[in-house]
Image 1 (cartoon, rainbow, N blue to C red):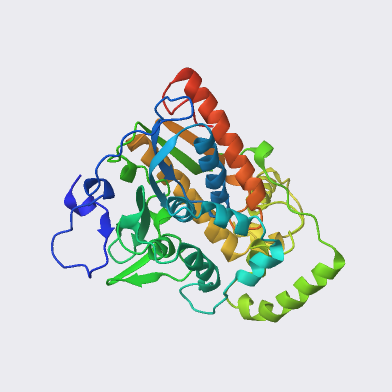
Image 2 (cartoon, rainbow, N blue to C red):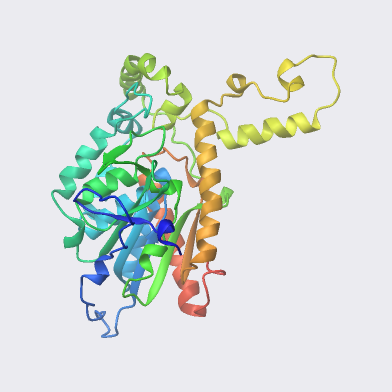
Length: 390
């Protein structure tokens, strides 16, 4: 790999111009720790864990980590981007239970209230309300003081490269890694404009390679669709709660509508929209166009080879989300081919919508089920990650 292709480790001092700095991992500064032993006296398997991005699907990581601990694996290194960086950071800091308790108590209305809607052209959400809670949980923890090797991956928009946070304030690293382009405002740090690491590396396995681990496990949130895993939209709540929700939403609807589609705003936790997901609507419409029989009715949209998006109920936010997920799916396959893990857990993209942040309990359970199934096969067959893509 050329120097110009190497991700850059983010440090507290300002970045100097010239040659890229060498990648410094926490492992190069820490001595290997003797292997821990389980209840039966057997050495615990040391695992380096890569956690992928995927919005609300990232809650899966909580369940996956819980199962690893319950089954006697010792996590000695974590790398992640976006929600993977957030959950991994919470675990490394010993705050995952606090975070789990908080997110599992969030309802649809709670998620909407946490939105920090702005009319800023570079992001529809400032994210300060959410990250104020994260900062309060984490405190002033620095990455280099964590008990395990930790890497948060972000993307430098100006430098067109990955940034690896392996030193510095933990909350700052997470905030940069989770800044979804066009939605959450970017972070400006040391002359760099930083956004979601998933833009270049949605499943950051490479930072785990240098860890003193027996195994490398990865949790991918961009798996192929699985109808059996889809979490149905929540039922409508009692009328008194709907009244409160409708009153609050009415106040911000006009403000948000100039940038953020109303359909997208609902997808952050408001009332579930009736009907299928944007992907399903788009698939059905295209199929209808292909199979349509000749008709005397003139449809100018189909004559020009396009779709009446408003009639279909798909807005620009939905298209942007589909675009990002398509890009991430391709990048994940590329990363897996270059750095295949010992065990791969795949979570279907349609498990829940990207911004269903009120569905933490359901996603945590899916994470537990998927990790249990993957470990059962791994411990029985000891085969490569290919057949273990569960």
